[in-house]
Length: 191
Picture 1 (cartoon, one colour):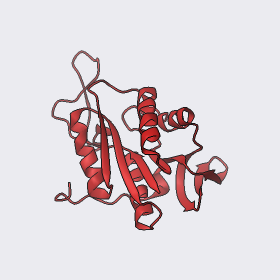
Picture 2 (tube, one colour):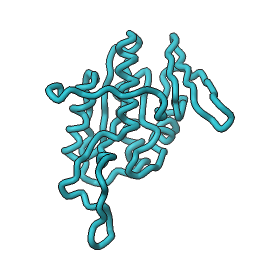
Picture 3 (cartoon, helix red, strand yellow):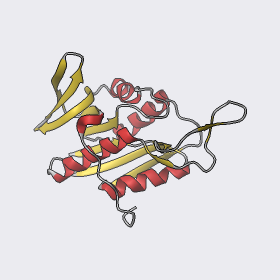
Picture 4 (tube, helix red, strand yellow):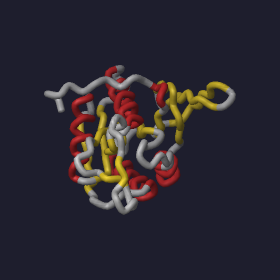
């Protein structure tokens, strides 16, 4: 089974952000960028599925500027087989990203698509749900546990009353929560 995992370039969460003098946006001059922490969890889950023999191929995809290659290299260093970069210098909003990812899903035909539940820069929590709507695929959001069993994926998610486990028929879309796993570190030579 092919697993497609989306990654996003964001300001490193350890960096104190600065606002531009005209208050129009965040000042990105000389700011360290990194992979969105929820996307790191998504990549880790895809790689773990590969290590269990469930996934035969892990494909990382990103939408962003040329510099986003850095995050794709990190995904490859963590264990992804291939990377797809949809290059744009424009700020990509959630719906535009979901539409672009829908085209990638159509071309790649993955058995499972894994995304972080939200990005730490915009904090929208929309791309996964929009992608599911555009592709017509079932979705499991806020996954704290993912188990693939034949043509089904069982997603355990945290809800107000405790835990809920749902079974989705593959292909499906899953968005990751913080408790799903602890991402490994990429070795610098691998990057």
